[in-house]
Length: 211
Image 1 (cartoon, helix red, strand yellow):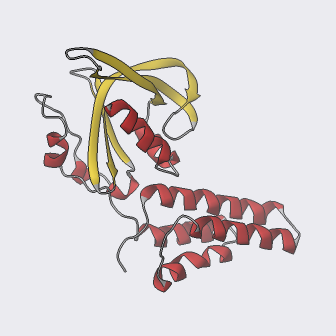
Image 2 (image 1 turned 135 degrees about the vertical axis):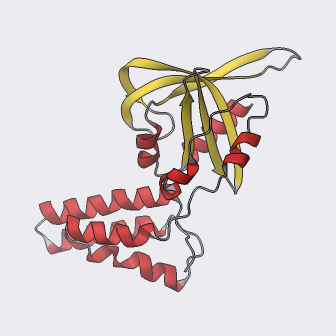
């Protein structure tokens, strides 16, 4: 069976599995537990369109999870069917043709199944780069990144944590003019990737900053 689970979908499943484990540890009523199981399965299946029987058979055993050990085994099995982030160093460089001596992180040393979007901070230019994939097409933006002195909500993953202001410069309506757009995003892109359970906010963010 080919990989069919996006990374954000896998993250969503992990959250649902956590709810199920918590439900089993706190609820004593069988009907309550059954309701949690049904809700979790329904939530997970609702993410996928046109699933085949083999894919459903892989997902459905989620209702059999009772504890953390079972959860870890289930998630480890699903991880084999997560679609890796599809990008090469050459493809990433093509997204930023105006940037000389672009420093690209070593993709061959990453587990690309953990990546919803690729991001890194280049100390030499003080710029933060973001690469995302939407409908099998890569998009890239870069801009300044200023660390915030307090925790905040990330506009990409909606999680509370260490954030900073990301600002990208885009062309204005009049020729030769530019304007800056941005928002607060996680300082730690790895944690942000782990928190992402949907592509909606990421896609909106990229589209808005690309102008």
